[in-house]
Amino acid sequence: QLHLVESGGGLVQSGGSLRLSCAASGAALDHYAIGWFRQAPGKEREGVSCITTRGGHTNLTDSVKGRFTVSRDNAKNRVYLQMNSLEPEDTAIYYCAGYLFHDCRGHWKPQSFGSWGPGTQVTVSS
Image 1 (cartoon, rainbow, N blue to C red):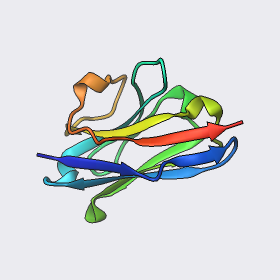
Image 2: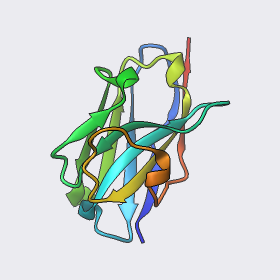
Image 3: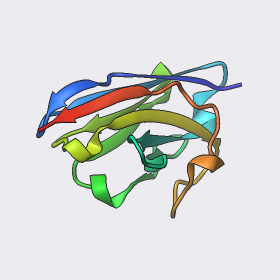
């Protein structure tokens, strides 16, 4: 039901910034927590961040804390991932996905989410 599309990826040097956007359609975005995930070459898909249905709680994986910020604007059907101080290790395809009324607490796995977008490539050069 929920359809998501990511945008905003690109090529950036170490220390640079990008803002990713997750655009939603087909269902009420405010029914869904949105997770951001990434998959680098040769690695499994990992959770990056999670934001609850109205943005009341957010969660970030340790490697991006202090550098990334997740936010949402349900009126615009958008969820954002602001990425600052990017490092080569952040290079990956970034995806957004939904989970009905998830609380974004504790650990999460990609298998728990659905309505995956096609992803957007982020490449960080040294």
